[in-house]
Length: 147
Image (tube, rainbow, N blue to C red):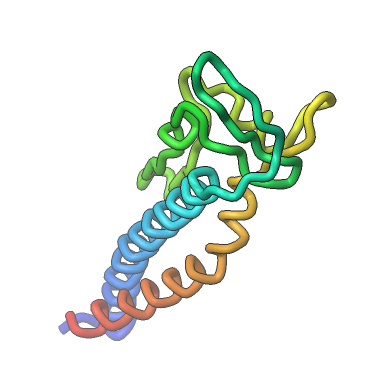
């Protein structure tokens, strides 16, 4: 029969493995929440910036402080969640490829005020993500104690 210490080590390893799986799942779910929220901010109407015409299309830009207005859809399509389980993290990225301007919109430049979409999405989803992480740890504890 294993010693009490050996039993404890086995239970601890099982618990840590379960917690790692649940936390990774919760982080990915949180990344999807941020992705969806950021995309919604861009896609939502009601922008109040200037109106201009490009070729035959009329476009209303966002005003400073508003999320960017959707124009071509490239910014929205560039927002992606990337799981990195080996590094125990999830990345939510915007602006890969031809959309190098995502950071310029988010933080502004010397010639343009910021049009944040990413930081507000993170701020709004933070409580939901924390809740999901706590639920994941509790689920892992339940699963580990049943084995």
